[in-house]
Length: 339
Image 1 (cartoon, rainbow, N blue to C red):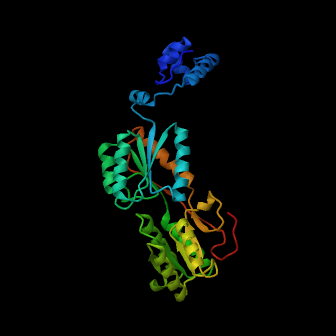
Image 2 (image 1 turned 45 degrees about the vertical axis):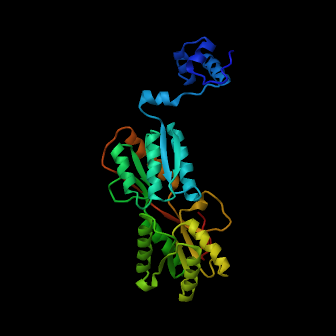
Image 3 (image 1 turned 135 degrees about the vertical axis):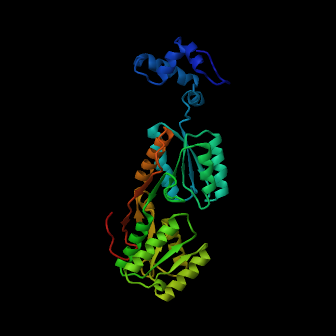
């Protein structure tokens, strides 16, 4: 068999090497049923030895689709986005699509640049985890006509396709979990996140009101760094606060580490409840009560909605809302409850 080292092996090269037509080779490589199993294997074995790689761009020119999706998340150092992208990869594979994954760092300017890159790569559609200030990005997507779905957050209700958790209810359940454990709760957050911060703040306050707490006994703090968190914890400790609803699991674990430097313990000094149920996927050594909302099901819904748009459905924007639940692991101070 001739060597094709040094240049890209084409379909025609495989056809000449095997003695079949290019059409037969193409159909054999796609496992079409009209090509016998013996012939398909012979052609596929030859193509593999020769180093043939399918030209996806040529196929996309014929079909009008690249079978590539863009995914823009905040940052892969956050396990929340790791769980999301794992599920998105699985869902894309079921559709036969590939992914281009970008990290915006929750920076609207960087996010806009990444959108331009995704557009230049001719992605069929985009799953976007928007940051505060993403309106310019979304307007650009609408202008060029690329289908998109907002994941986990939205900017303005009923204006874009989005798949979200009922975060207000999730925060309500988390706060009530602390109240039911006999704790006086506070809400701790590191920075304002579009949609999520507002919703979780509202759920926290609703649970406090239902428990008969006055506004001054429903403390909320946004602490941008470790020093601010430590100061706030000591202040709340002095005020009699002994329960923390923390914006997300990563911030909750960070708060627990800082508590150790202050000689504070969970749940003795502060019971803690997080959000996202990271431990539902990764078993970590510090058990944490958390709000769960089935990330894999959210991703499947987001992918299904995006596929509808890619294939031409132009109905009104849809909002898919997922119900949350509490997973108790004992950090609330109550006996551990099985998931």
